[in-house]
Image 1 (cartoon, one colour):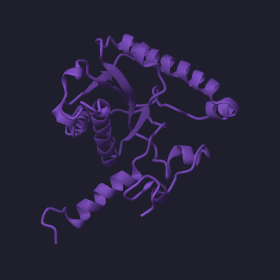
Image 2 (cartoon, one colour; image 1 turned 45 degrees about the horizontal axis):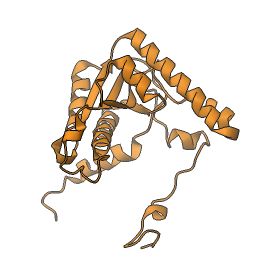
Image 3 (cartoon, one colour; image 1 turned 180 degrees about the vertical axis):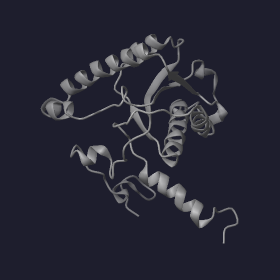
Image 4 (cartoon, rainbow, N blue to C red; image 1 turned 90 degrees about the vertical axis):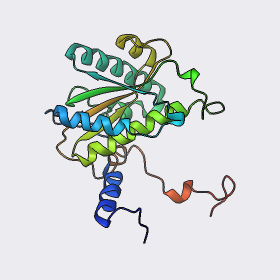
Length: 216
């Protein structure tokens, strides 16, 4: 018996949140009460970060006009992405890739400016700031699922254009548009699987032992 382990019920809840988390694109409007939003953001803020640099910055979008401008940026990139898809362009354009207009909340997750001064853990792997922000986003995602809220990560945007729109300082970077809010239901499987866009790969294909490509 491991004295540090959670109870069976608590462990099941953690694994359930992980298994049922979905990248949501369909939202049902509504609201997220301030106390709940604060709790979710606090969960994000408890993420691990290399050298305790805490590089995450979240911008809550409450201005309807600004939300529409962000939607326009995403739509422009959606078209450019479709053009780069070649023979799958029409298929891609039929996918719903964001819920910006429908979600109760829209957050922009950014990397802070001045990250170059943080050396601890980043001297040879400077991208660990991005890894730290990704952990914060995952914390937010899992907490949202536990609270019954959907969240979708949108990366279809020009980061320079979005940064200018939001007034980001030099060196700061937007990484994700996070659509958050109530949903009618959660997808039983990832949406791209449901839509026939891609198939999930088994863990066995991605697990090696001692050397790359060597199966355990």
